[in-house]
Length: 277
Image 1 (tube, one colour):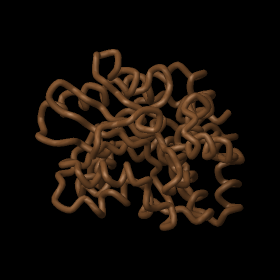
Image 2 (cartoon, helix red, strand yellow):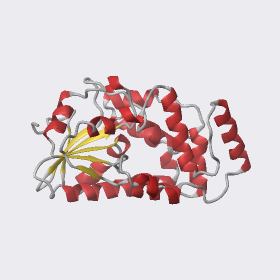
Image 3 (cartoon, one colour):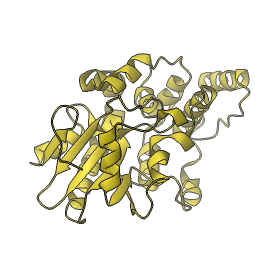
Image 4 (cartoon, helix red, strand yellow):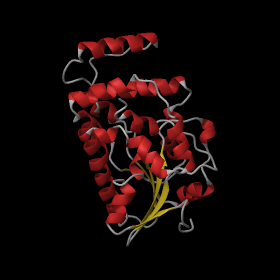
């Protein structure tokens, strides 16, 4: 069962190029505006640059906003309470983990929280394929933000609390999924072609079957992102350029859908003309 890994994989691996169409929206509020770009978190140098309208939107924005500032020096201290599992792994899962890591020459601590182990395994798999977080979309824009302030939609502490709050069973299912073979081709093609319906289906087909994970990782987080974005629209004198995991921007309960429900004008910049940058 892939469970959360379809979402994590999507926000971990994709290819962006000037003729690709990653989710990209313009949000117009009564007092301000924002750009929303669906992101991937690791990459390669030849992913860039993005399409001209994305690059121009970033250039003319006054703020860069990410889900979380992963370079925040407080993270090392903040993560300490969340590092370790609340209960031991089942023997069968512990043995499977040992075998998986041994075959790949990895040192895996079975005492770590399963959601952390899942992320470690996934990132190691991506690194072996040549993809690095230092070349991800967030890093790409962070390195070029200049004097733009950096805002956080959530922050690492909030995200860690969300994952830590998942039950042992859900976290262990994540770990099981992280050790399954990966086939991200259809997901990548949907992202690159701008097929939001297929992208949502492939991203959520497993996670939607797990009520706890769906509620915690998608529904509540999307609602929180919506509220934060709305508050920002009245706080700046220019556009906010928001880079967020693309899974949060597609589907019926996405941030985009929630903003529209609140009466904001949200334009898909690949389907309709967005305001000039």
